[in-house]
Structure formats: structure tokens, C-alpha cells
Length: 212
Image 1 (cartoon, one colour):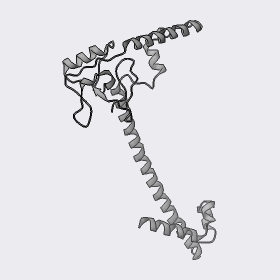
Image 2 (tube, rainbow, N blue to C red; image 1 turned 135 degrees about the vertical axis):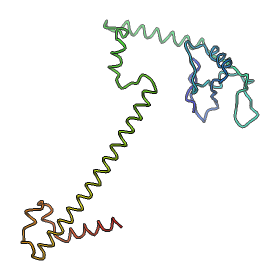
Image 3 (cartoon, rainbow, N blue to C red; image 1 turned 180 degrees about the vertical axis):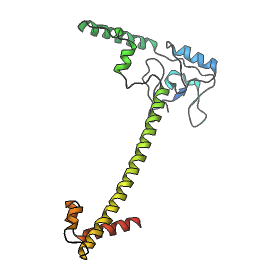
Image 4 (cartoon, one colour; image 1 turned 45 degrees about the vertical axis):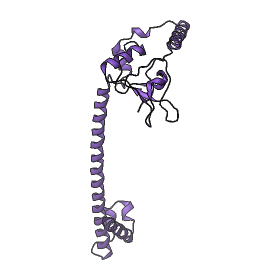
């Protein structure tokens, strides 16, 4: 999906509601080289996701016989507004110089080494492959943590069920006078020992229903 136009100074962006089409740079080396020459961008190397919008092609460059607007095989971009782009670049440079002249003297940005920049922006990656490797590593770590969390929750549920069973047993033994009254107070936490036996039976029933 195209996002913007690669032509210098062109602000066109993809919008399905606007009648502007986007076209990839040709795969043929000769035509591709000709497009790059006409774009006139310094050190410009188009990738597989680099596009030019339809504003840079004459009407005769399009094949309108089908349902979609396609470029003809010999189409080349010829409509560019280089003067406006150069004026814009000059204006930005002048504004930057004026801004720098108003600021107090200090260490220039160019005096910082690339190592310092990397340290200050340690969240950045040198290239897309490094970022992709980092994302894959993080995804594996997340998956491992999810498995560990699931295991811990299962252990917690099993321990809770065993504790409920033991509590019910002690309460039943007390109710049947097999254990002396008050035994649960010594082996059960205060919160559980104060609960009536009926509450534990309800818990056991809920557990049985959840198993079903």
C-alpha cells in the first residue's frame, strides 16, 4: 500500500477518496534508471515500495481501457515542480541559519560523535534487519513468559483445591466430634477458620461444576 510520493517537494499521500493513483518504479533496469534521472534526487535509490503519484505523468501516459488506471509500458514521469522545491529548501536553510545565529554559542551538533548519538538514542536501530531480529526475540520472550504465567496459575489452582479439600476434612472431623473443637483455629488461617462448614461445601460444589 503506497503512503506518499517519492518526487522531491510532492506532498501527495495515498487517500482512496482522492483521484490520485500511485505507481511503482519499473523493474526494467533501463526504464528504472530513466525514472531516477528524471526525478533528479541526489543519491536516490528507489526500493520496491517506492512510488510516484499520477500528478507527474501526462494524460497520454495512462491506459484507461480497463477498470483501473494503469501506466503504459513506455510511460515516463515528466511533470515536476523543481523550482518550488528549491525555493522551499532555500527558505528552510535561511530560517535555520537565522535561528542558529540567535542562539547562544555552545557546542555544535557536528562536534558530537556517532557513538554519542547512538548512546543518546539507544532505542534506535541501525537497520531494519536489526529491528526485525529484536522484535522476533521479544516475541519469543513474551511467549515464554505467557507459558510460565499459565503454569503458575495452574499450580495455584491445584494448591487452592487441595487446601479447600483439607479445610473441608478438618471442618467435617470437628463437626463429627472426631477432632476436638478449635483444632481448625490452630492449623487454619484465621480467615478460613471463621468460615462455616457450609461455605466450604459451596466451594467444593462450584469446583465440581467447573470441572464438568
